[in-house]
Length: 141
Image (cartoon, one colour):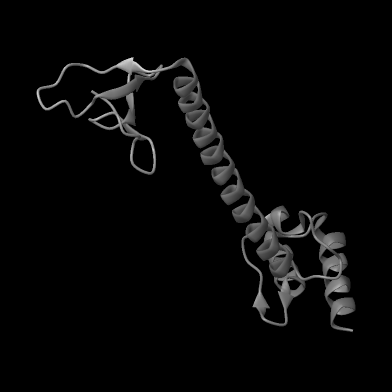
């Protein structure tokens, strides 16, 4: 009944002056924009995007934000994995091509190194010719 009265008032205002005033339209918006938890302000047409009819606007917007955050995290992880994969491929190419003698050093600490495409070196053997400890060690000059 409340809605019918407001619609009648709106139609009477519209018929008397031709177009409803901004104030009347704002009042109607506030009446219709109220839900159980209060008024909805400033959402505009964004609130109606991707709405599942069985869910409220705030719930749907929360789900959309959660999905966006998850996708962003997955994209970052995917990018990092691709970079690590490329580095691993380069290391394998270096190991397959063989050993390159290292730059001369006084202490002989870089006895077995292999050069990479980006100008860095990979330690593939220790000073005495023993294998490198646990993992390949990367460094740049």
